[in-house]
Length: 171
Image (cartoon, rainbow, N blue to C red; front, side, top):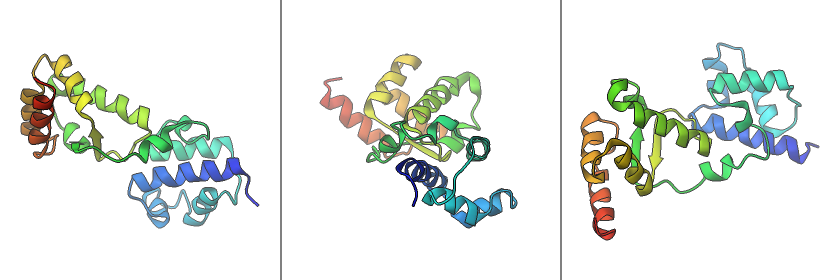
């Protein structure tokens, strides 16, 4: 019978895999057979002990810090929180000029690390994050929202959401 530690570790492995939109078979395909579906599944169920070396290699494969997989970090609860309406397109962000988008890229990476959210495709941010980014970019939240939308990194619906929040805050 798996220990609670093994179950928790397995749950974190499963959460990271699912965040990245991978099935167990998808992991095997993406890794070109390096990670067998049956083995990863047994790690996730806690049925099979994983060595530190294998865990480090699996963390590297998923592109996450190993600490995110270890029981005791609070990232799983944070990743399960309901997403806000402001959605950053991380794939589009990678294609922007670093001189302009650098602060946003670093800010997004920090949020990902805090939440343990490594899906690499989108990232939900909060109204407070937009206000903080507005200070960093020295612009109003509304102007910055429009800029991010024009860059293609923020969902167009965000304009109304930020405008509504700014009006509610008396901005």
